[in-house]
Amino acid sequence: MQREKLGSRLGFILISAGCAIGIGNVWRFPYLCGQYGGGAFVLIYLFFLIIMGLPAMCMEFSVGRASKKSPICMYQEIEPKGSFWHIHGLFCMLGNYLLMMFYTTVAGWMIQYFFREISGTFVGLEPDAVAEVFSNGLLNPAVQVGCMAFVIVVGFFVNMRGLQSGLESVTKVMMTMLIVIMLVLAVNSLFLPGAGEGIRYLLVPDVNRLVSQGVWNVVVAAMNQAFFTLSIGIGSMAIFGSYIDKEQSLLGESVNVVLLDTLVAISSGLIIIPACFAYGVESTAGPGLIFITLPNIFNNMPMGRLWGSLFFVFMSFAAFSTVLAVFENIMAMCMDAFGWSRTKAGIINIFLLLILSLPCALGFNVLSGIQPLGEGSSFLDLEDYIVSNFLLPLGALVFVLFCTRRSGWGWENFRNEADQGEGLKVQDWMRPYITWVLPVLIIVVFVMGLL
Image (tube, rainbow, N blue to C red; front, side, top):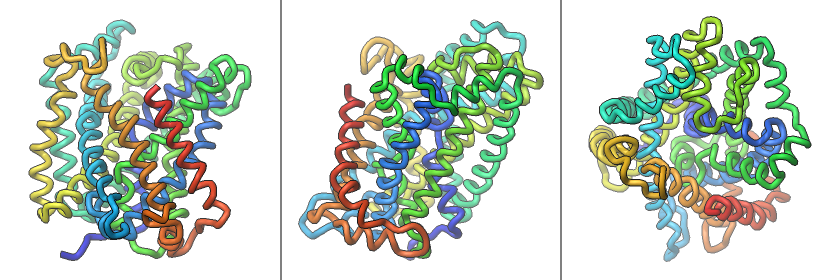
């Protein structure tokens, strides 16, 4: 059976960026900026995004394009005979399933909040009552399971329509709308009375704030965010490399994806941080910033119901773009490994993920007595911990070692593949850094994640 291909370069860039652009950008990045002092954190984050995320993404794309296979089978196509690199393909498959076991529930939260904003649920509520809406929603198993199931069924049905007519066409529309809504929201925040201080906080590095937060703490937080924002390490990017031709160099395409990912992250900060300053709200609220702090801000903002609804459409699109991309990866791996048709892979995985995602959706209510990481923890915390602290960093390390070691694919094969086509090329001076320094940085991320 002939392998499907993406219909356009734009589709490849938007789908790859859509996979990277997710809750890590539009939820985690703004509250980390608030917690770690704003501008200095952003500057350090961008530095590590360039020196760590960019080369690792280029390598994952290269392995995918050279093999023309999904992550479960890609190593077998290009690894030396008798080697064991292909074992990582099994961990890629595990990582994609584990990621979706909790991500589908969180994506469901974004959809819930869109309907709550547009229906006026928060209008007239005091801050404590707004906080109760979120906690009461978590306690309702029917709501949590229903929204999770909606995300899974819709996501797989989109992908079952085909690579171009399903995933690519829907992602193009969704990502275009996401960017437009994002820019409208950012402009609105920038013109709020008193927003200037928030803009300076986000974009202007302040050494005093950096020192007060602890330089090492800020560096570690920025390094972690820069690494995890691109979803590198479980084959999420390799699959889209396998769907493209050799007309464009992969370092150049990686730069485009990283730029789009960064644009969304910074814009999310510009939407949220100035609004916090304009309404005298602490931007250091942590994870509750999105679901508790922002609805209170929208309550006090002129036309707040409109802006709140638009914001959670933006959040839903960001989450759903990742869901669609990872679902494609799961389906492609099942098609390659078991010879299933696209439709069969979609239908079986709907039922499989509905079952696998139940612990997370029920972890805040029916199964709240099970606290796998200690008091106050949930299945979401456990699943997120395994993916973020083990599968992503160790998987990225495997890709880097595979592309730079003679026992793997090797530097020359990687470079020849990455450099095919027009655009930025991998340079000779990059080899010592990528071969020896980058693995050490990834190990630091891994160790700090454990600590």
